Image 1 (cartoon, rainbow, N blue to C red):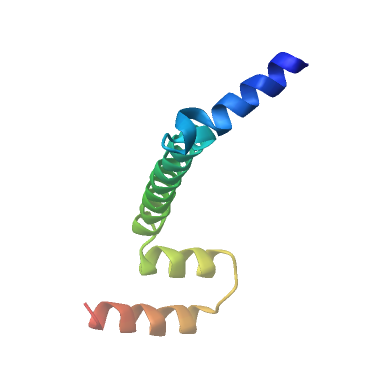
Image 2 (cartoon, rainbow, N blue to C red):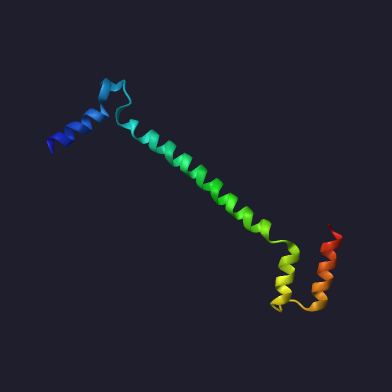
Length: 86
């Protein structure tokens, strides 16, 4: 127990107040967390873009018509609007 207490005091007070003290462990961990968060955000954002790129408006409209969510007349009207807007 005394060894643990002594080790803690040495880490906290190393260098007589001129050294990094016990903080030398904290800052590298913070940088690793920051880097990991940036990488996670980039990977997650890239995955969402792929899904939306694969779904064109015409495909979504065709799926809704096939499921019976919209009538044939509405399907044809919306399809004409999509084709005109190209």
